Length: 165
Image 1: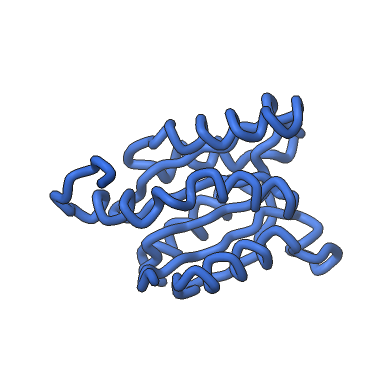
Image 2: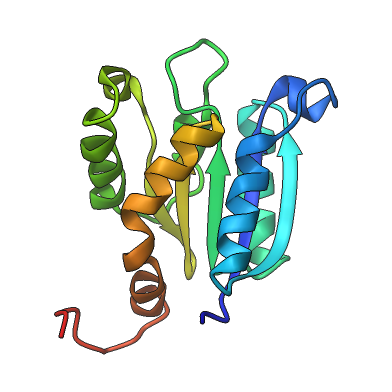
């Protein structure tokens, strides 16, 4: 069981106004708490770049998250700005995570090619952008979940070998 701290941030204009239930964020919270991670931050915010940037950075700087999972805002709609917000957050990009999620998603739906999900590092925290639907968020995170603890350990400076035994 992990002892890592995680945050869930949902980007949804209607959700932030209380007009829509956040099923994707709730599902991610349940999955990671069941897996032994400790929730340190949960927010539903509007799809605004400045709000996204500040909320993600606060989850790391104030709430000490080791992992931030965002859900929503990764498509091609005019209001989908999560990837653009990450330009102001990431110190380093981790493209393999998003590539793996899209590759597996393509086996389920051809619509996965319009996903603009990204993953990267801010300070010593791994950030993963996930789609806004509950089904897609869970399908995507499941693809990379087995690698997350090791990735976070490496981000924090572990010198352990990356090879699997």
